[in-house]
Length: 68
Image 1 (cartoon, rainbow, N blue to C red):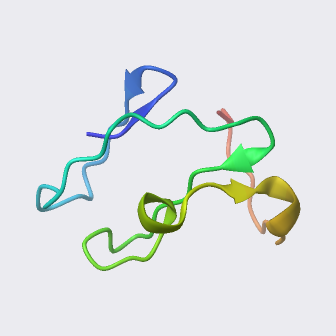
Image 2: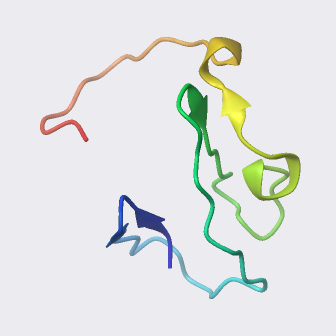
């Protein structure tokens, strides 16, 4: 189960349980914790740590409400 701000995320697209447990992670201000969409084979923040927001760039094409 993935928690954000103490709330479990509803992730109906996850079809199999995680193969590993992860201790709680406190994400520092100005950083992001990223996870790949193929969580069993992704090299993401579980392995490389959090990423500085200044290192993330991109654009969005659609904006949905409500934003979290």
